Length: 238
Image (cartoon, rainbow, N blue to C red; front, top):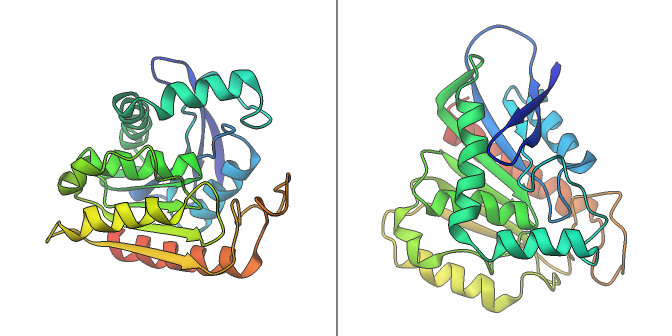
């Protein structure tokens, strides 16, 4: 596997590309990190995608490779609030990541998906709601509040949300609102997987903070990854 630092976009994003060994044009996957910004958890996920045979881009939606400690960090909180409160900006940042991945000679630009964690899940799904030419969008322990649900009918991608039932950042009313919006779309292909008793950040073995809020869950991690990789194989034809 080849790892390559990639600078792109109007805000000088610091992405990292993971390319599997072997020649040929491959499907691509954009990996959006959690609300703290790009870091090792995002790289780990992108690396796992490359091990599955995809060209994966760990995307930097804050720019400059910014990585905050958590949202209590004032600068992290400012950047998060700016982006989460502006759907057009979310879509523009996602488009920059898509364009840089689609332009790579190793990538089949007609077979690209997006996945994300926490706020990164919202980035992936919001990009799909814009009508973007991606095949699938997947969110793990994702926040749903920023989504433009009035655009549900524009989504061409298959959608998958994998969340825990005890995640305070994804309350039941947000999940219910998402389901209601999608049910109105006869052509939509979407799925919500809920893991009972599971908290926020359940895919990250290194998660910290209050264990009543943030807690790794090996079962939910494994099951959600299996669901995601199955969907990607089906949607990307790989």
